[in-house]
Length: 161
Image (cartoon, rainbow, N blue to C red; front, top):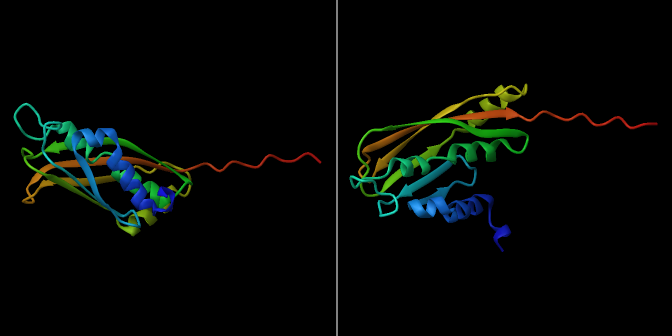
């Protein structure tokens, strides 16, 4: 039955059942059918609170971790290698209550990646996502660098005659 669900629904179900996300209270609320938008939230609770009663920084980062990579992978397809290469998080304000992150990619960005990776050389795009509270106050800004490369095509083995 699960295999009959659309890919974006299946990915959402898998992410919401992912144990690190369950423990931190991360919830993927929406993945668009074209994989160009993902919305994530995380409530403050005993599994993600730090010593001073605000969101633990590692949980803030983990709620943003795989999403740009997944979005690019789904849009480029199996002919490309996509990995997270680097990340940086800037903490702007204490996170209290529920926090949200909205990931967005433009179709033109996917076209740009295809063009730049066409020769098989790595492309290292950087994306930024803001983590905000319920009032829209900036809690953290996360910079993600991906590694994107078109897979090398294998040459067919010449058949002996």
